[in-house]
Amino acid sequence: MPALVLERPDGARAVVLLHGGHVVSWRAAGAPQEQLYLSPASLFADDKAVRGGVPVIFPQFADRGPFVRHGFARTRRWQRLPGSAGVDAADPQLRLRLCDDAATRALWPHAFTLDLTVRLGRDTLGIDLVCTNTGSAAWTFTAALHTYLAVRDVAQLQLHGLSGLVCDDRVSGANRVQDESPLRISGEVDRVYADVPGPLQLEAPEPAGLRRREIAQQGFTDVVVWNPGAARCAALPDMPADGYHHMLCVEAACINRPVTLAGGQSWTGTQTLRAAG
Image (cartoon, rainbow, N blue to C red):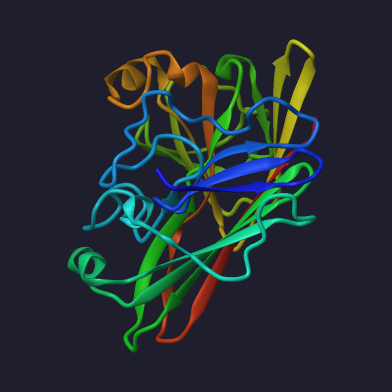
């Protein structure tokens, strides 16, 4: 698939597909390991979503509404905008756009633009999503950056920053308060945490020491934590049976309070990942 590369002189690097505006790789300067999980069984096809990286979810999260699951943005071809700086720029960034057309209006009858900016720092990856209502009638949407983080062993990691928050636990089918601190993964996890106040920290042991990543967001109010676990992963056609061991989704999202835009209004959501060690 057509891909664009962002690269800094210090060695930081990211790869973005035009298909879906999909970030599929990110390496920080001085850290040779891949920061994002990309399934080796992913189906790279024009009508399929890529499994892994950072899919853009719009205008509907999951099956929470009448439209196609997770929306159509992740399977559409995005256009590169002028003003992007790519390989060997001091502060490289890539700007992509998706606009409504006959195919999207057949699925979701509204006029819009989505602007995606991918920013690469020495040890950071920033993703800005700007949604604009280009029509006259108001409409409502939900959205997420469905970020797959690469881990050596999901059972060994710790996710800090969610203690005391209310979550919709899709596995148990009930709302609950997160009383475990930090969160550890011991099976299938599918939770939407509401009104997350600050950055999260992901810690995982590696042969060379403790690997830390910070996950921050603005504009997005919720966080999704997802891992399919053994049984569900084995049933996914685009994941190896053991793939769940090596990934954890920590997603910036607006789900519990959908965003409503009047004609001409815009909304911005940002997720920033930092490789802290």
